[in-house]
Length: 251
Image (cartoon, rainbow, N blue to C red):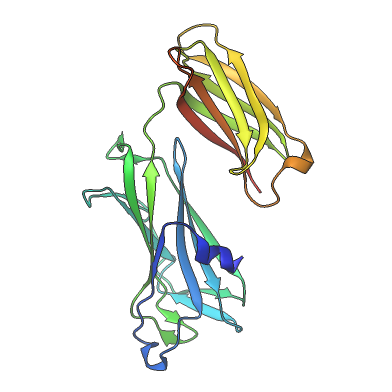
């Protein structure tokens, strides 16, 4: 699994050394931020992996273990993971065994100052706030950075809810289909798991749709995501428009 950390797309990893500089050795851990932008919100994973063959003990001055900040292309900060939160002002310790990975998750609803941010490319920056590692000082914080594209609001689909697992899923969603029909497929990012199907709309206004998906167990990915793609088709040329991906399950 640690190999997957090193291969994560668009991750720029820097690890300044001060207290450990004299040893001229690489730090015995990986720290990565991996953002996943959905249609309504972003999930941000922070992974702290022990790459050494001995246990690591990270000491923090407070109960805040990391800081995540997101910036737009103008360099303006639009999100901070610590904003509006209170942290325990006492020393905290996290132990990570060899080959173990500690995972934290943050969620952002794309809102800044009460409004959804604009579609476009954003920079996600994370710092590990550990002050000591195995009793030695970490004066400079471990950092990780990633780029991510935030989609605009979809004019045809909204308010999606997903339930189910292991190939059996129920999806409720509101659609406003000017073309008169909802189309969908299911894939795992590489292979198509269910071919194209269509559902007719009753009107040109917002209405509720409920889809039931059944994927055979032998088609499901062992490691990966099951993704539903909702879309319309253009009246003029039949091209796909208003594409709306929905993650049904991460395996």
